[in-house]
Length: 208
Image (cartoon, rainbow, N blue to C red; front, side, top):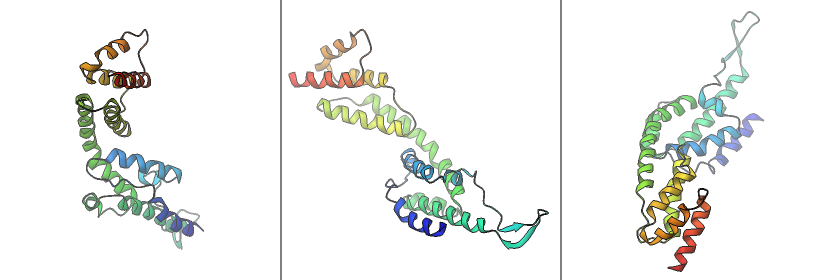
């Protein structure tokens, strides 16, 4: 039954792994992969906590026998299934870096070591991009879409932007046309929320 279940599960999970890992999107790739592993109680395989059992059973004295351990074949099958999920969700260049990995834990660890630091550099780049994104000739809606897209990617990368910071960035970048609107928002007794600022700016845009 376990073998049949694994066989039918393998193709279907690829519907959830739509993001192919490249050199710049490790946090996004990891964010889609972890829920899949957790939902099937398989995370311990890639973390190395679930170790491969002995291929043969032990006797009452703790010595190896020539009797095959059924748990060994089951573990190998599950681990190789996870490894196939990992390899199937990589771009060709990334796949080439783990072709010599024979189990899911070593493949997972190798990808983390190689691309996590790269992701930190990407986070810095996205923060800079967020700080420098000006409205220019964009509509308020399009500008806010751009800002939110960067903020969403930062959140998925494990470096979320606080609402107060996001509000401050937007108010400083919407341009001189909205000085009065920004001043009104800043004059409130309590800090304005993102949703309130968005509504305020969209309303002001309709008047211009």
